[in-house]
Image (cartoon, rainbow, N blue to C red; front, side, top):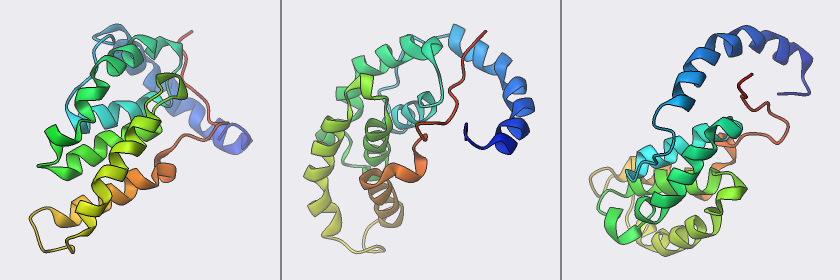
Length: 151
């Protein structure tokens, strides 16, 4: 965290090591977003720590957000849908996805909670992913966490 000088100093080396990877990531395919629900959620989670270099990726994700977070399309594998909805909740405010993710979650909670863990295939991971999407704060970037920028 930015306010913890020991942590910042300890992370200086690993962050420097990741700069070439980040540079490569930012220069290849950044204008595309994944409509795959888990890919979408993972991208949204990662983008929290990326600066302006990742703006094209954010725009690409906004183009596919409706598809990635589509309840009717993805409810057959709920944990994947919940990954997208968690990503929607974690996405930068500028992307405007949180309210759509919250509405979708409101739509699926009753259905998911109608079955107990172990009653259906994937029910354990479905419950964990739903809980994570309902309260994604453990996965969220702190406001004072450093964003990666390219020099």
